[in-house]
Length: 112
Length: 113
Image 1: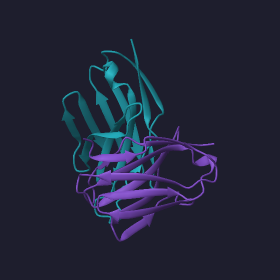
Image 2: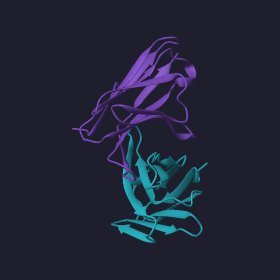
Image 3: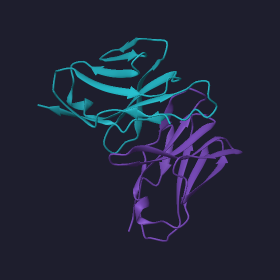
């Protein structure tokens, strides 16, 4: 079983809809991250969380919100989806300062 | 702010060595990483090196670090078709609580027959 699981893997939706992407992990890590990936732009950090009560904005948090429901779960919401949020979204976890991040397989999100 | 730069594409013949280069700007970098992304998958950690090391070897992979020039390279010996992927260079500082990892934009490795 995957250590970092993202659901759904693919989602097509319409402009204005609210969408939630979910991430769960079995690695026991405190730190969790949400990124989006666009072709040619690499990875951009949306939000990150160091524990359940510690949530921080990344470089492109506008239009997104997150919830850390438990140590193992970190969800990303798009309150009112717009087409330029079409991208590949990744969740990652880390065991601590300087530790490498471990990624889920991603959610491909298309907004029409 | 910190930046990590890498070329976007590299083509290599099967059986040759691939060398993917990366430069970074943060002189406080203490950990440098190489990740591999295959189609339809997330980023997989390949290897990482501490800034007090010059070289790390792991089977077909060799990482070289020139800290003075802030240059990191990944050499893949005897490149195979399964090595076709996007390779990301990344760095972070170990002493910083907000240890965000800074990623390059990725180098797409294409294997020629």
